Length: 112
Image (cartoon, rainbow, N blue to C red; front, side):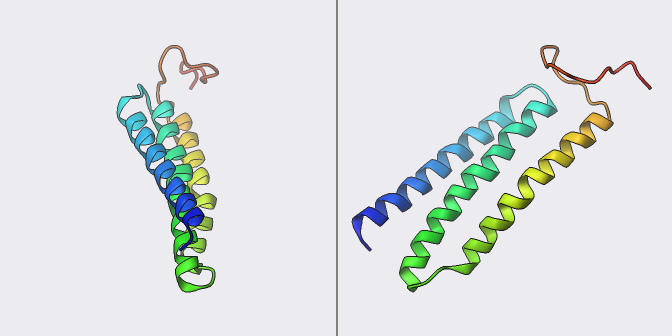
């Protein structure tokens, strides 16, 4: 494997791991459901996506062609993670889960 491809794969893997770490930290430390939802969603989309792209590049080079398993998982992840986060956010708004006081544009909780 050429050194420049090793560098690109390592960069994707390290960046993906760093983003996943930051997302998990956000899940543990952020104050309410709405902000906690943001951290892992970005981590799963960007962090795991970068890891999968690094894996796709590595195995595509090793096998001499495009690795379809990693390509399909990456496409599936990029299509489903934002949609599932949007649906969880809408469900939380519908259930009228409270947010922190400084959150802007929260629906009025006194209605209903």
